[in-house]
Amino acid sequence: MTVKKDFELTVLTGMSGAGRTTSARALEDLGWFVIDNLPPKLMAGAIELARTSADVRRMAVVVDTRSRSFFAQLSDSLAEVATGNTQINIIFLEASDESLVRRFESSRRPHPLQKEQRIIDGLARERELLQDIRGVADLVIDTTALNVHDLRRRIESVFSLESDSELHVTVLSFGFKYGIPVDADTVADVRFLPNPYWDEHLRPLTGQDQAVAVSVLERPGAEDFLTNFESLIAIAREGYLREGKRLVTVAIGCTGGKHRSVAMSEALAERLKARGIDAVVFHRDLGRE
Image 1 (cartoon, one colour):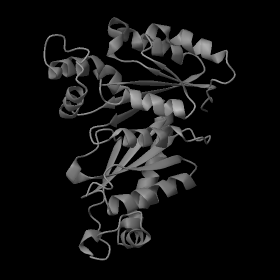
Image 2: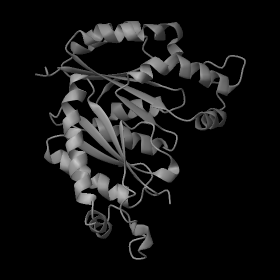
Image 3: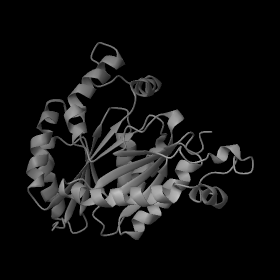
């Protein structure tokens, strides 16, 4: 039996320039108590202080390589916090080197670890430093193709959920031609279904339109796919919770991320909700065509 935690801590970390500030502001707007650049050694004390306030039951801390030597203490600090009645979420934000370099160049700010070298050298050091925490993150968000508004919606889609469900699933639609999401726990390919793109009446529409959804879901194999994929997630549910993983991203892809993957993602999310699993949909590539 899973013991319900009475306090929730979200650790925001990841690559510099990948969107930690935007994510922190989104959480703050959702009612979280947010602390930026907190030395990990002070985490337990900050939680105890927050617990003294009846209004604070969800706290987010931004921890990154600006903490320098303090960052090495993060694992020990998280282990200390985990011994209490606190639910911990680790959110890791990343992006491609090319995207991060462009962001630093546009802001005209140096990377915190580049020293006297290039931005790309600082990024390489940072990836090496962060590889362990990335490996244990509950949710990895790749912001390469996301603007600040997309990232805010992504954060809101995960943390605006208020039900008692212990597993939160983000069903992410995408287009294979834009790349497979690196932040997905499970990836499914629905390109086996006929593409509505070749129907001139359906081409300008999206999978959110009823005509496209009906066309996709009535195709042979669509119903079987949804039934089996839904069952797969239900089977993995207990394992995820047993391992302490509450935030799961399921990605469904088609060619362009406009028709089939969108319709199937919407349908899967509805099925998961009917099972009592918190599920939200995020369409990564919708609108890019």
